[in-house]
Length: 397
Image (cartoon, rainbow, N blue to C red; front, side, top):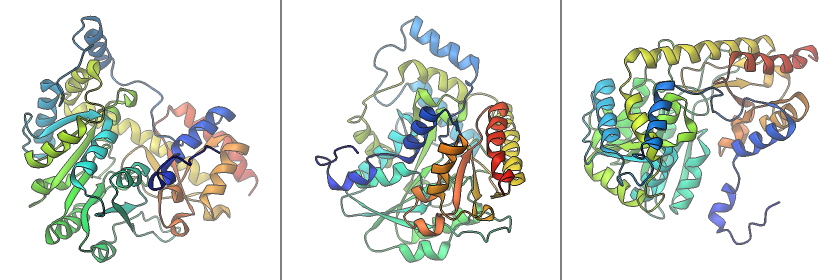
């Protein structure tokens, strides 16, 4: 156990992450890692060539402009207009960050005071809890409505619970759609409900849209900033890593109205200052790819989603719908298990497959204890290998 005696108390609960823990165990034990969400193949060669050229010719080897290359900021602005009809100034409405994670951190630190309350939809990406703690604010978790087991339904927004969570100290709502960890995509009706609450209570919204292009079937991603009255109170977060399968490049951004982005820029410059110099031009080119790139990318991921989902169902898991992201959620109760933490620990140690217990990403561990998150952004042969190892579960039933 690490000595945390010198760490400030508010950060002690965030000393480790479930993703790091499970990935370390997977590496140590030789398990198939379906826990941490990173692809096992590279993105487009064209983008790699641009990044290599920026290193070789020297254009990417020194500090880029503090708020990001103008070409990338322009590409982000064009992307928001082209896909969503949002008008964002590349000069004053965009800041490039070290991944979406830094954009999220800078936005919370810039816009939330110590003692404010920040609402997150539960389960939530664990970074949200850590950055709220960094800001000295209070996390208020509003659970998603849990489906009845075996119905085929997914998680949904509980509008009544969200409205009830608002207090005079509430400053911000963090919205994440497509949603990590569950794979749900908030419907327009659900987003409009959040928007009504935000407007009625004069709240800011951070919209984490890192998986915006990873949506499947009939699902549609709608940025909450595109709804009436929401642009002026929303900071939208994007990620080149997820859209182009270069998670290690750590190119993210925040966009929105000038006053909010100016605040984010102030904080961001004191974090990593600048980053990802050789990769910014490459991501700019990627954002200008034709629509067919994004649809083909989603179609390929959907095939892998369906492969893993069908395999888990055959083994007896209750697999919930996944309309986006890299992830599917399963209910382990049909297999006779009740606790995701103990199940995932047994899975990685004895079966050789790593997954993530969703209760580790929630304040209400009892409600979310029976759910496990799996990632399908792996090669089909890797998913087949994982399912082959998991087949002992069916054999033991």
